[in-house]
Image 1: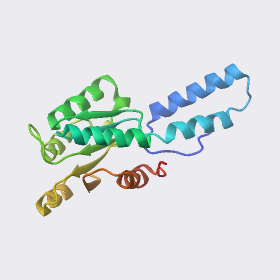
Image 2: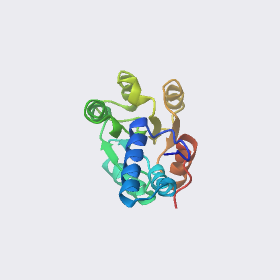
Image 3: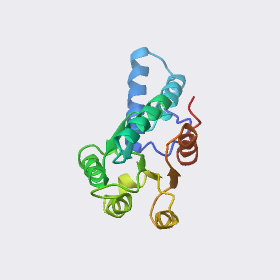
Length: 185
């Protein structure tokens, strides 16, 4: 019988069901009577990575550096990039319609962007279906140190406000606080 060792908040029930099915198939193929140890190993590997992260920033250099950092930290299976709020909403709407399990669990959002800035994005984001949004953490990642921007951000549904650049330490804090994940080496 399958026994979860721990629940991780960002894994949805579909993901857990898929893991359970894979473990059961492998257990049957191996002839092992108790798949507990094997499941524990699969679960540990699976649970240490976020399914997807979305970077929303109009600066190509910042996106490159952030992707590189996230890749080195090995914190996510997929890192997607949007150059502004409109591109981000388009990507998220596609996730809702085509592949809900690819909806990012972490969005790192710039404030000042052309076409649609971070604040406008957050207002439009509230119109997306609630189910995928409830497991998503949004952190403002910006060069703006204006008190007005920070006050406005406090009125919106974000989990944090970080000043660029994104660092290993900032990312470790986000992972620990919002996803209960240990720091990555």
